[in-house]
Image (cartoon, rainbow, N blue to C red; front, side, top):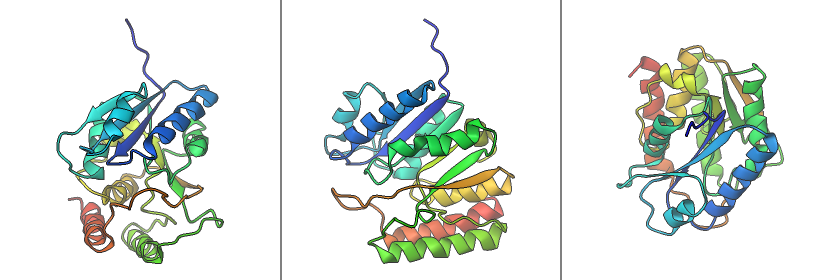
Length: 232
């Protein structure tokens, strides 16, 4: 039977998010159905040790299981290789991103306004950031990206983004961890990809703790940003 190529692939990287994953998947599917676009949801389970994988398998979505915990970047890259859509969207599984805002990221690409859309937590002034250290870290990385590329963004570390899948033909991603956001952005800028930011709501996680280590991952992100600029 012929399977039509979806317009949009929504990739959800997961590591131990059993309390929020089911609702995220449900709301992503509901929103995309309302948009009337052909789509697929691809959950990439990064060797979860809780019930996240079982939840994914019961949600009637595509599931890709990684047998060894490698990190968010590795999960996303695995998802990119399997995605079939003309547009790829990445959204976090911890409930911090609102699936109802998917149209804000996808429509600028559909309308020919951009090739790469970033959902910025800082453009929505109603957002409250409890972790001030992480907020300052993002702002410092924003400055670094602008210093290297000459192009500024308000949220270089946002994981809620959409882009044309053909961009992956020109952006060779290597990161295994959270640094993939910076790597993708800098390499996209270097190839001249049309980029746009849109404001998004940001909800603090209500279950579990963030897997990001501000110091350890911050160093990795800083290093990856520099290496991406020099073409490594």
